[in-house]
Amino acid sequence: MKKQKLDRILGTIAVLTIIIAGIIGVNLAEGDVFPSLYEAFPEADRFEPINGSGYTAIQAQSAEAIIGYVSIATANGYGGPMKVAVAVDLEGNIHGLSIISTKETASWMRKVLATDFIENLSGKSYLDDFQLEQDVDGITGATYTSRAIVEAAMLGSRYVAGEHLALAVPEEV
Image (cartoon, rainbow, N blue to C red):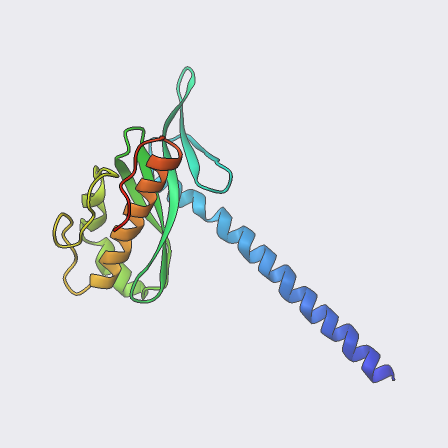
């Protein structure tokens, strides 16, 4: 009888520990987003969350001014999901990108980030086609990774354009 009671108590403690660790992990992951926001939109002095759908980029001058928005977009690369911070200016153009998290191998991502691929996406409009190898040069040997970054850039910019800038967004094909 005592052994069953002890097993139940230990089982309950184990389940609670797993739940608490999950909650802490989610909160730590959210805290890690802010460095990526500043990397994507370095001109911003601060970011304000928008109902869990992104962030407003604010520049503090004599009066605070909204200079754009940052959306967190996810697309699948070779190794799995890739989370990208997509900074968009007030005209709907991509201002910058930053990889928040990825399942790609570290050496592979270093190779991709060593190119000017991400910088070449800056300035693209939410209206652009975002077609790899047509209007966006890919990275030789990194097709899936390139495609994931391009898809996240498109999704993020179009989300901001439609939801925060009230612009007409092209339908997905």
